[in-house]
Amino acid sequence: MNLANKLTLSRIVAIPFFVGFLTCGVNPQTPVWGQILCLWLGAITIIFATVTDYYDGKIARQRGLVSSFGKLMDPLADKILVMSGYVLLIEISYPGTMTALAPAWAVILILAREFFVTGLRQIALEKGVVISADRLGKHKTGWQLGLLIGVAVLLAFRATISVFSCVRPFLPVYDEITLFAFYLVLVIVLVLTLLSGYFYFRNNWALIKEAK
Image 1 (cartoon, one colour):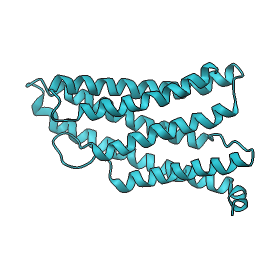
Image 2: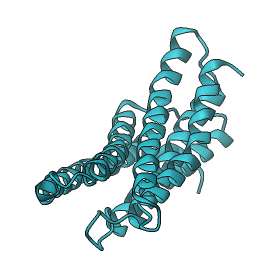
Image 3: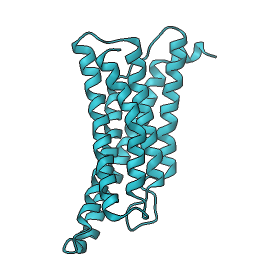
């Protein structure tokens, strides 16, 4: 197995660690310093996964290691990571609130698009065609992963500064800015996700018709 494919698989291995660290970090039964440690480890893990997403494709192109395995597994690893992270956002509520970070309907739309494209790739694979990620799909994935990184880092930073009594009076302002930025990026993610799904549908309509 070449280096690019190893990086792709390492991204899949990182997923349960990311989910576990964030779950531990937002658990009120976890001691404060344990929450801080878990949240920062979660942030580091999702950053690592995103870096591998960038470099596996770059290394494959530069070294001539592009393979059917990589074309299939690279976007699949992205989807598993994104789906795991966004399902987690339904479980996580922002500190001091009882509302989930991401509404269920938004996550359902994102997951539906990912399952649709995965199914389309399976149909194409049965016909000997490998559908690799297009440019818009890569931008979409970048924004999706960027949102997950932002959530992990901002939650870790908030947990860290909240232990200092001199900072606590400013937390409501921090929370207001953070939540506004989060929902703004979530809207962008939704638009890119649905738009890229439409173009996959349009560009591969012939395959869909043949599958009937």
